[in-house]
Amino acid sequence: MVTDRAAAEYYRKNGIDKAWDSVLELIPEDIEGIDPEMFWAAGKLIALRDIPQNAALIDEDLIVWNKTELSGKAVTVAHREYLSPDIYPDPRLFGVRGFPLLDRLDFGVLPCNTAFLHIPDDSFRMFYAGQSIAFMKAASENKCGDRLCRMVFAEQRLLAMLCELTGTDIVPLMDMDRLFIAQENYTHLWGAKQAMRDNEGLRAGFVNRCRERIRNDFPDHADLIGAIDECTK
Image (cartoon, rainbow, N blue to C red; front, side, top):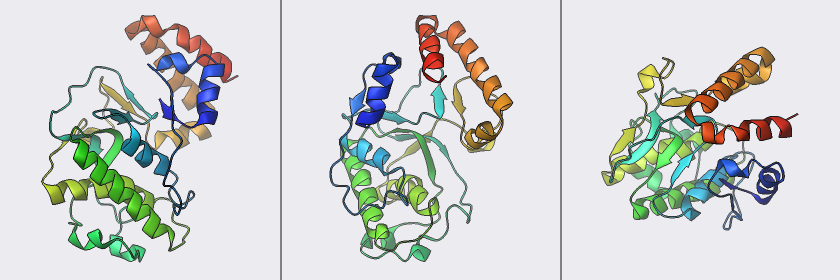
């Protein structure tokens, strides 16, 4: 788990740090000039830059139930996404200056959902992270209330564009046309998180199903369920 000091202390205090091999406290550098409200997931991209080579990033709202085979060369992502204009508008509408690479990118490439992200090529990982951070800094100079479109451009659309630019292959774990069909390997909460916040019954039902699957599929970790339940009371 890569997180800040406050969250790391919370995990250790409540005994749920054992859910991971280790908890890495990230003290990010080079964040001056990034608007934290506009780019609320900037920490993820900084973590990508600073994590050990050949590591995969997995968002907490994505559950990987079975071992995943990763490509030795291609970038692996959760899934591709459609170019909905409400979420992925023409990047030139952002009015961002100081990011010249924008003129070289193909705006027709489908974005990548990065709830899961593995980049085996270390030089490309650093290139993508560096360009994303550069975009966030450039875009932060043009203040606006947009808390979605610019963030997902920096994190998801830019990745796909840079893969296209460099000839880097992309392998999705899930078919974007079958995301809402039940399957065994992955659970991606995605927009369901808000529905669960609004509906206690929905949330409780989902959590109970996860508890049962952990007990059945991963009995060695069943003791963690009690620790998590206790710290969330």
